[in-house]
Amino acid sequence: MSILKTTKPKLQRISQSSFAMRAKSMTAHLSKDLRDQYGRRSVGLRKGDTVTVTRGDYKGHEGKVSAIMTSEGRITIEGVTMKKMDGTTKPVMISPSKVMVTKLDLSDKDRKRRLEGKKSKVKDEKEKESD
Image 1 (tube, one colour):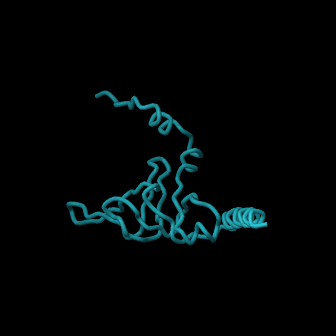
Image 2 (cartoon, helix red, strand yellow):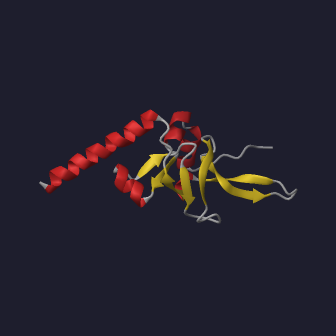
Image 3 (cartoon, rainbow, N blue to C red):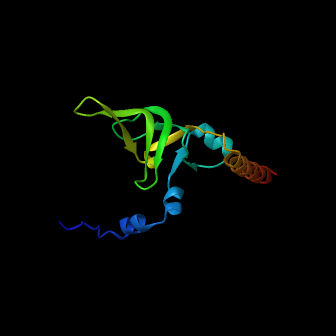
């Protein structure tokens, strides 16, 4: 049996990219209030962030990120499951581009510091524009 290969250059670049590059691409948009609070549009996803599904069959479901599969480029969310034929439930893997972050997990001090630093830069720029 032969192994199928994609002919699309974009997909070839993604499949051959390093773990660090794949992890960097696991980002999601922030909600309007978080966007105003932190002065940025998107943020890298972490386990523990609360997200809302914005596209697809599970649109409107909200829950915490329970796992991040960097190799597949997908996440799983608590409460977003599918029922298998034998009656057991299985978490549904969702693309990070189809979710919106509604609450950030700020238990990591470095993450909090990076977000706060970006916020202060944006605030300084807005003050300069108003002068």
